[in-house]
Picture 1 (cartoon, chains in turn green, cyan):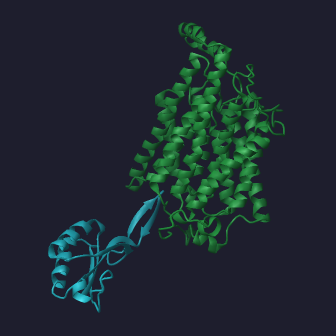
Picture 2: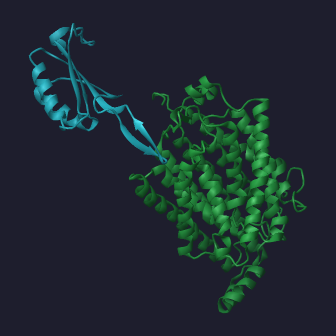
Picture 3: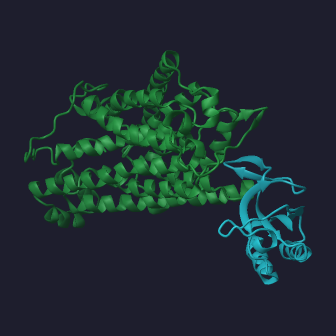
Length: 434
Length: 112
């Protein structure tokens, strides 16, 4: 998803090396500048609203995996974080990430769109469509955090953290790669954001989980107390919505649709993206059957998402078979990391740390296997750079919020549920709270 | 008059209801309840962690019947609700002091 225009020429040059005959045909079929502008913009808009809807996917997944006494709160957090992410990405985010990037950071200030009816043909796409597309990625990062720290963090400190993450941290680290900064110059490769979006969200979530601490009673008397999710159908719907949105996330990260080569690549990305998710689910279904004698449905849902995150760093180059394997290993990571986090007493309500952080690292690391342009060393440098910056910066903000206003509700409020304590409306008022 | 409270396995409800209708039982109140008896709970697994569910879901029937009908009703519930395995539930019978039909004000046996 590099913010670099990909009109016909470079893509065709690449094609010419691989398949000379096809390239000539493709050259003839490349559309002219104005039409390419329209197709590129359409790709951003369609991909953008698909990724926007992932906010609904996260909301439903989380609403299904928290206990019924915290469902209203989780819904409120999700719609609020999506909105704050959008505002912050306009206030500072886009410019920090993409405008005059020095190598480590862009510039401060709101981003101005084209005037009404205006079009800058040199960019190859409407700048507003690009802004919208980048904004929804930023919002996805914030959604990741809310799932991990669910059920035990007050609304306002969470929203303040969201504002800082989406307005400052995510854009700064994003500029390193997608803004053309130092990692992109070094040759780091992260096509649609296994690291830049998913691991960043995962690191911020991990820092939050450590500083906020586990839910009351979750790890008591040396054992793990289970708080089953309140609505498996909602969690399943949320997962399917995320899966659908991922076609926009990965597919539109091709960033160009003005040549037949680009459109074919977008299509191949759709296939690989789907197959990686499928591989993730099947791996979890088989592994949980073998390990626990029962198939864990919520981990199967996580498996789909882990497969998707794993393929996000390179959804174009791998074969279909390799995509399935990459996704399946992502799923396996979930099965082994979820109990491991419990052993470490890191309470991750929805499994966002295995899914987004660990599968994101895996997907980013394995890019060189299918993409000759990447190297394992540079991938590791990128993974570490994003990890250190985000984990430390997020940790500092969580810590300051803890000192200044407190992160957790009172024990009594947490026990009776945040729906009652903070929202005042219960999601399921006709049911006894569990 | 007797008041019968029966705790049965949820999937047995339709069968019991049909059997009791056949005996002439004119009405019953049904609730979803949770509890435990000799069956205790069962161990389940969620996201790799085992936990015990010590309250199991059951269905509770409340039926008011005449003294004559009571033994047949109890026998019928016992037979239709039984799976001959642990956790089939229990039947309690209480004396019923009075019954009033709200619509008409009829009382006792005529209100059943």
